[in-house]
Length: 331
Image (cartoon, rainbow, N blue to C red):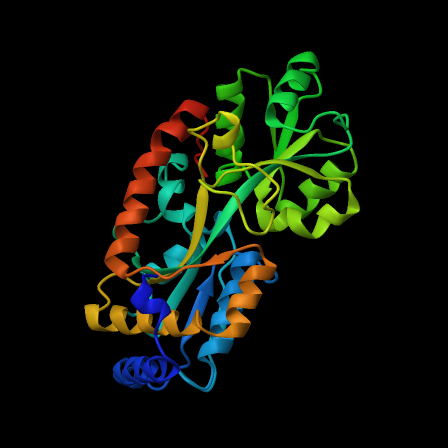
């Protein structure tokens, strides 16, 4: 957000919201007063679902009396994008999704069922989420930095492995980048989500893991996890004592996942702008901001054209990374 956005008064926010609701009222009536819905391609209770429900709560009674959050689970989140692509382009159906669906997946899946650059209209990010690299009790307490871990991994290649929440997810490729940059053996072990991977990490079944920072945060007090680096350009306020990869000499290892709002293709520009206004208003809600902070996420709004450019740049960035990893899927 720019300084003007941050200085938006409560009265201005109310006017923005009123304009947005007025602009969306027509399309929603054309839908025979159907309830607006937010599609989510991941299971209930996960980060994407929690973000969508925070938005639904902020818009309930404003956008409509009820705003539905509808799961379209499967294919690593891709079913949500397909459902959005096929939905009416009237503002009544939106998608909340991590950016990987549009930046990394085009390079991973040979038979992607949607076009990442045209089958969804980016409205705005809601937040940014940095990833982090951590170690568990399998690794000696003397390992305190990435350099220490590299030395340990070279001495113990048979134990050197890292967990990620899924094959093809951003943490998978961040870990692979680290392995190649450090010149170490670091076997990738994908899990079905962060929870089981973190359990094995804390239990000493696997040496290290790369996950979204917010997944680590609830477990740090146990002392069974130690964070060695974060993948943003700057340190995170949620773990300010943890240096970035760049600070430790790995300057190319940067990965920040945005979670954004998307609309179906061919949605009129006026409707896109109105939904963007609604996102900005929601991000001024205390409950939304606090809910994002609990996940370790930084709130962020960005105009639709700017967000589209960001996604295009990240799509170009991740292509060579995925190719270098040698990983692809026919799923």
